[in-house]
Length: 112
View 1: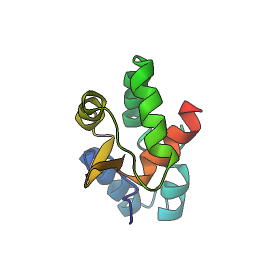
View 2 (view 1 turned 135 degrees about the vertical axis):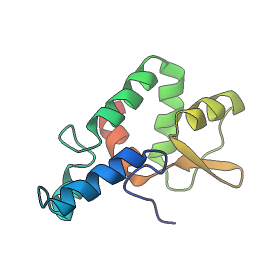
View 3 (view 1 turned 90 degrees about the vertical axis):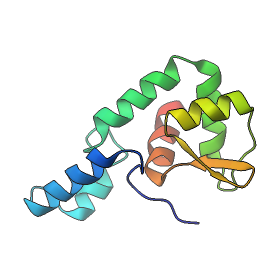
View 4 (view 1 turned 180 degrees about the vertical axis):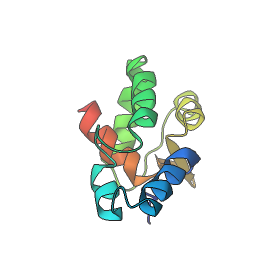
């Protein structure tokens, strides 16, 4: 199972990455290295998601369970809906997993 480094619901991050590559401001390696950090080109997008999660401890706790495993987890349907509305998860049958590896990397560091 593979994950996209940039969130599928965040077209501006992908466009920004292409812009930096085209202008040769950043190499692909540097973009990928910085992506899950506070220096990455998606930092504003990630910070907004983090703020929303920190406003709801229960939601943050459940999302933390999602990013801790590669198998996917079953969650409460209300929490699944909230995480889906935030664009943080995707479905694999009855299980949920992070929408992209960027979310897994960033939120593992931020929520622990």
